[in-house]
Structure formats: structure tokens, C-alpha cells
Image (cartoon, rainbow, N blue to C red):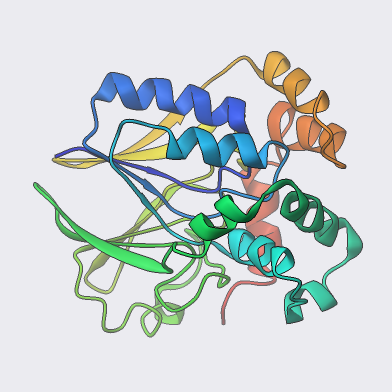
Length: 251
């Protein structure tokens, strides 16, 4: 059994399309979408693309999906009230692009899921950590700060995302792998994902950066230029983001 784990797409449809080409070549049996399909520049098209695939799918709800869903329902969350306008605007715009049919899809996505993968055993998929969808940790977070976070997890492998940087590390007796981000990577440009089967493969899919940036700029997304420049053409370096996350990661 081969499973592809794709996280943090953020409605970057061209990046998703590039990854799906690799996934089809790998002939996977299941795709796990690990949350934060939205917000981003092509939200409706991205969700519809995923729902239209002929490959079995399982979805998780990320914090971005959750905030968009709240806006669709007219709910102002604690995060939304406290967030700067530059973060709230994409959530608000994305919510306006999705209709009742897609709202019914988002509401069914669970926070975590487990599945058996031959060659690995039980795998737990979560967006950020097993206990919530917003906690931040990286490859540099000390293990002693994470033991209680993964306490009680019976799976041999846990897969997460949220911080948009791949890693493969051990916390206690659990192997913990970050899938990276399909649509908003930190580090080398391109799309990041995982292939799970007899082992764990951290994958990187390159694509035509200029062409994708052009497609994003052509959308009505209110931050299209910034997204094209900072998330496609010149993403922040991993070193810079490790330093940034060091200020907000769990203590």
C-alpha cells in the first residue's frame, strides 16, 4: 500500500497539479490531505480538483480550513478578532468564494485520523500536533518539550504539517515526520509532500515557478502579488523561519 500525504496546499492549485502528476506516477492507493487546503488564491478550484480525483482520499481539517469555515458561518473566532488585518483578509476573501456545497465538505473533515500502512504499521495523521491544529514545533524543538504532546499516541509513526518545513525525527518512541507544504513552502521553491509505503520518503516536486506565479497573479486574490513573490518565486529560507518559529513554538 502506498499513501501520499499532502499538507498545506493553501489553494495553490498549480503546485497541487504538479504534485498530483508525481502521485499518479507513483501509483498510490490513498491520498491523505492533511489540512490547510485553504485559504489561498484558488480555493474553489483547488477543493473541486481534490474532490474530483479518482484516487481514494481522506481529509483533515487544518486551522486555516477551520477559520474559513467559521467565516462562512458568520462566526468571528478568537483568532480572527486578534489577528492583524493582513492575515484576516485572505480568510475573509476565501470564505466568500466557497458556497454551501463546499461548506458541507469542510465540516466533515476530522482533526486527526489513523490508518494502517503495510510496511509501517499504524500511522497517525494530524495537522499540527495530536492535541490541536495550531501548536508549532520544528526539527529544532527540544524533545523534552514534546513528550507530553505525543503522550498516549499508540501509532509508530505520526505525520504532521502546519509549519511548512519537512523533517524526520523521533520523539520518545514515535517517529514524527513533517510533510512540508505543497503550496507555501519555507526553503527551496517547489512543492513538498510525503510518500509512505515500505518506508517514508520526503518528496520535493519542482515546477515552472514563473508560469505558476503568473497564474496566481491573474486571480482576484487580494494578496496575489505577495503570494506569487513570497510563496512561489522566493519563499522565506528555512533558517529564517526556524528562527521565527523559535519565538512561538510550544514551551
